[in-house]
Length: 214
Image 1 (tube, one colour):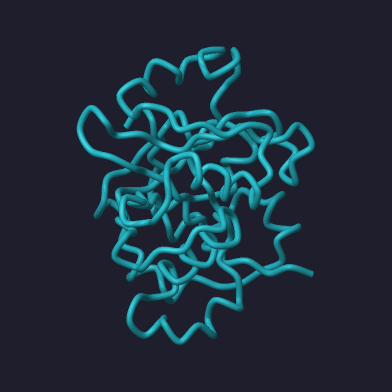
Image 2 (cartoon, rainbow, N blue to C red):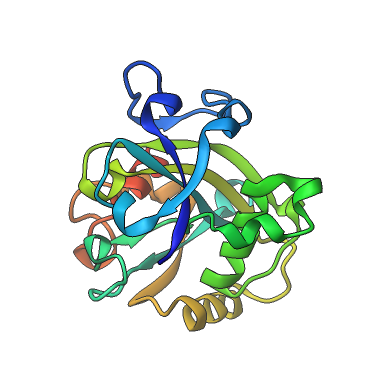
């Protein structure tokens, strides 16, 4: 049985649930601490009265007109079958009980420690805590998969990581095993968020469209 961190929806949003991208400060994660708990993932995937807290990591390089984002297409037989074949700008994962044992929690907190672990597990890349910048939140009830998750979006600055774009792409591809991965210009992403406008005529997943259009 796998346990993951969740919060009851009524504590996350006491009133109506705002949809889409939520700016920093719109949710007080510190105030939610008494209401966070670990629960069986299989059950929570079917229960939209609760939200699973997910660090959502956007890998970024360059500035200005040179800014680019690492995007990837999930395999058709992805472990999360509801996202199979879709393109994404973010790597995400659950916060697990093992994260509580990380000694870095005292300095950085549970959420950031979990984000750093997920970055290594999902991409094979390692950065310091200063490379992670929280930029907002995602809440969407548009699809079954998104209705049971709540995203905490981090922008990961990879300019300080040694290696060319191609070398970093190779590392991520070897770890994540996507169907395809590309560095795409940040300025051009919004034009790819429409249905069928992603590379190869594909589609971006719900959360990625929200981040792109924020």
